[in-house]
Image 1 (cartoon, helix red, strand yellow):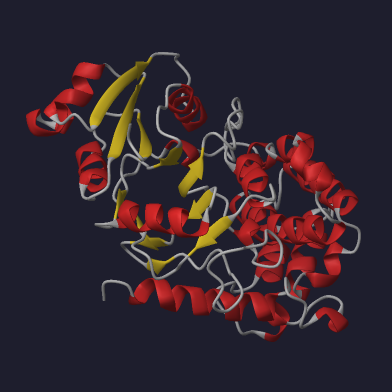
Image 2: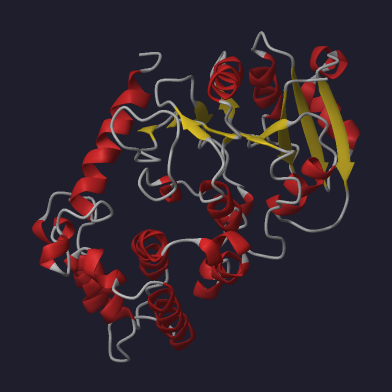
Length: 362
């Protein structure tokens, strides 16, 4: 039986799935690539892969015809049909660096890990600076203290026997992996992450990613109820919930605000979504505003103001690429400036992780 199995969901004949599959096979250990032909004929996928890959016993193709355009369905179907104990995911337009699975499997063996977190490097722009772990931490990682929650996508490997019933949230326009990731990071299982291991390579050369569609703001944040319903969330400490809520507000809520600004400001239904979501996250985590940047709190307040205009919203957002600006570093509660999950320390940790990832293979 294969030591690791990588599930690749493909929904379009234009996807370079052959690149993804070939990267899985570029390892010495016994691995398996399971391709889910999602609302796509298996013959189309076989044609795309080519004779050599189709004939390789380490490759199998399973068809799923459910008429639903969601990555959750394909990945869950793959998990339902998985045969290896250590499993992972790979986007059909992405790939693994050579030897990645060999290294990740070795790490799992050495540390008795149930979860191996993959470093991610975007081919076009460089490292994804997460998770922002403590210095020199590789194993015995903690969901809060090592900021594992900063990583949404559960890329890498996890042990199916430990998480037998864990599945991605179906029926969501976006965020199908949010509750899944929180469950992994805070499960109490042994977790390892080495930013110097061969990375997951994310490409941006395809323009039809399933989760990049537009829509209402509520579609961006509908996953919150799935997180709240997960039993692991109920057991999380108040500080862990506060850290997760801060990340969602800083990244997802403000990100959604910035993409839903219109010439009139915000549509009333979107403004109501942001008001409701902020109230929900404050209920999760009283005091969460204190560890947010001054600018972030200003944006959140402006987004729920009925008279907010396009100009006032964009002024509140400012230039978010200026990471060292005073109102980006300073917390709303000045006494929280050096908090582990406040911008200053989080930024420093992210830069350290990114340097380590970018150094691999360069």
